[in-house]
Each structure stands twice: as structure tokens, then as C-alpha cells.
Image (cartoon, rainbow, N blue to C red):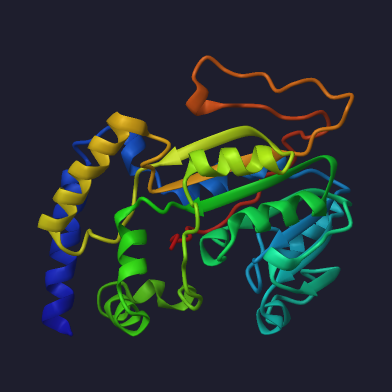
Length: 287
């Protein structure tokens, strides 16, 4: 593996050098942005936070939960994943498929990151998130997008071959690739439409055009980048590699969200959602 590792590293250096010529927003890792910039401002004290699909690595760790007096609820399809979380992480846990779950309408905040691409029916999952939220609550989503090259490859390649390629070229990612991916309607426009159908308002969204999948083969990386640039020009939302969304469950007395001049950069914080201490997290590679 010594020679192969040397070749892979050289290809990654070439890919990084090429990317350095692009505007900075093409180099923003969507999952890292979600964890360090998008989601933290919505975390506040004395609230009920549900982590859907977080398993042993929920967004709010035990220390942050204690400091902010958060009531933390974990929902995951795997009991083993929930049981592997650090002691004190969750106050309650539910083992369930999110597409067949009905909540109790008590959550101030739901966090669901890199999960919905793994469900067969995203509309059903969004309906379930709506039942978990109380009126005025928010759901924060991070979603790898269906129209990305890596998603198309994941859909086309047999599972064993996909995992073998990851083990060869991206060994650091293998641990987070245990569930099959379907990318059912996983585009930002589809999520907007489905969210409206569930009674949820999109109050903030961000689109990302970065992925490290093809950096191990510089010629392929360049072709992928040209495709990304074309997609960005045509429709940056539909052709994003990944995207983040904040969905608000409205109440009858709340004002409508304030829309910024740039619809791609919506910013809105409902009353009560301040910028309490941010969560510092290490870099996480999205799938």
C-alpha cells in the first residue's frame, strides 16, 4: 500500500491546488459547516432537543447537554448505536424507523444530519419530524444530495464494490458508511416542496458544492469540478452536492420569516432562539 498511498496523496495535492483557483465557497465542506456554523446558533438553554439518526455520535454531547440543561432525546433505527453513546448523552431514547414514527409534539429542536439519504421515503420522514416538533419548533437538516456524482455512484455500484473502493481510496470514511443510501428526493427543491406539504416552513438554507470523493484521481476530479461549475451556473440549489435546511413549525400567532435579498441565503431566527454557547466539533466527513 506504500506506493498506492503515495500516488493517492499526490493526486489529492493536485486536486487541492486546482480547487485553490476557485472561489472560496466551492471549497466549503457542507457537513463541517452544518456542525460548526449552521446549527450551533439555534442551540439554547433549557430546551428539548431530539437527535434523529445520531446514534452514538449525537450533535449535542453530554458536557454541552449538562451546561445548557438540555433535555436530550435520541431516535435511531439501531439500538446498538444508541447504546454506544457516551454515558449521560441521552435522557430518553427511541428505537424506530423515522418513516414510521409519530412524535409527541414536544421538541423545541430536532437535529437530523446525514440521515435522510438513507431512508426510502423522505416525505414520510419529514412528516414524522413535524410530529416531533412543538409549534414554533425547528428542525435542522443536513442532506447529501441526489444529483451529486458521489450519490449517483452510490446508487449504481454494488454495496460490496462501493465499500471496497472506500476502503482502498478513503479508508478514513469506512466507519460511517454502514447503512445503504437511497437519496429519495434528496434535492433542495424537492425538500422545499415536501416540507410545505408537511406544514413546515423553510426559514434558512445553504447549498454546498464541495466533495472529497474524486480528489484521489486528479483527471476525474477536474471533470467533476467542471460539472459542479455548470450545475452552479444553471441551478445552485438543484445541483448542490449537499445542503442544509432549517424548517420551522409555525404557530398561528407568529410572524412570517423575513427573507433576505438573496433567496439562497435565507436567515431567520424565531423568538427565543439566540446564539447561546456554540458547540465546538472536530471535522466530520459527510457521506
